[in-house]
Image (cartoon, rainbow, N blue to C red):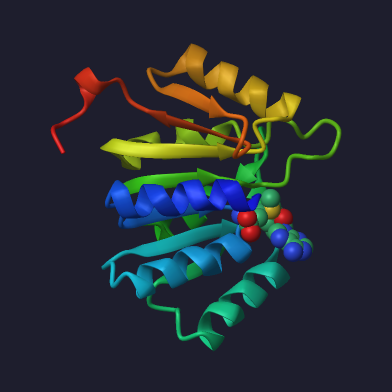
Length: 180
Ligand SMILES: C[S@@+](CC[C@H](N)C(=O)[O-])C[C@H]1O[C@@H](n2cnc3c(N)ncnc32)[C@H](O)[C@@H]1O
């Protein structure tokens, strides 16, 4: 995720009072968001799904080294099924209710993998709170653009593309949302 996208998500956590954060695809962003939660004394957590066991271990070690394990953790979630996505059994490790979902994995940059992030919204939708916000990264790529088209066609979520951050952010229609 580019720095501008991460800044947008940090702003969403602060101003949107997001506390139950799930990230598909772990990395530096997981550590930065956990740091933000601690720095702002926010009673929240970021839980990241990660398909690569070595990367999951490394990011969890980075979190532990900074004393951030109470604020962030990575769940190893092998890819499976068709369309290929994180194993459904790993989802038991996620919070029951999510108010911020960041879709930055699985990796979808190789030819033929452009649709890999599509299952995120449909699979996790039942856990998303009425006021949840979803960020899809890498929206400058044709694959993510077609994922967004499919989400618009098949769900009632509305997304706005921000070319400056390389993300699209989406919410349910306001009529469907409970008051904040
Ligand atoms: C787009 S990256 C996720 C990046 C993460 N959300 C961030 O912004 O730091 C998707 C996948 O690439 C792998 N990955 C991320 N950062 C990496 C790095 N620095 N080196 C190797 N693999 C990496 C992980 O398997 C991750 O799930």
